[in-house]
Image (tube, rainbow, N blue to C red; front, side, top):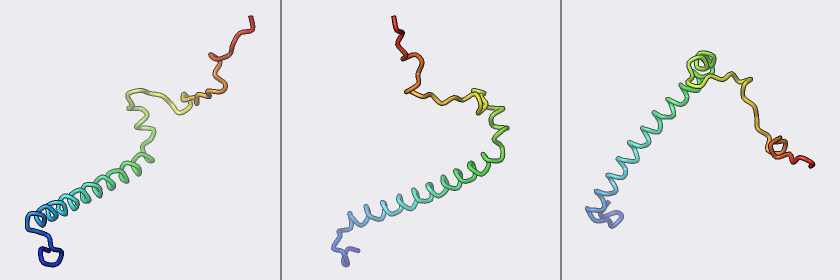
Length: 79
């Protein structure tokens, strides 16, 4: 590297350390992606079990979308 690219030894060490860190981070990303894939696959199968053990229990029918345009608290009275 020193001859081919004209890089001094101190910079070669920095480059090699960066390469090792990048390879380590790539391995961590790959492990994380495997974990996410497993969790997504598991989540489909045990959705009801997860709902029963949730900290805040709410069925999907209890969730209501809030519509800003039709918010009744913004309706003015005609006095």
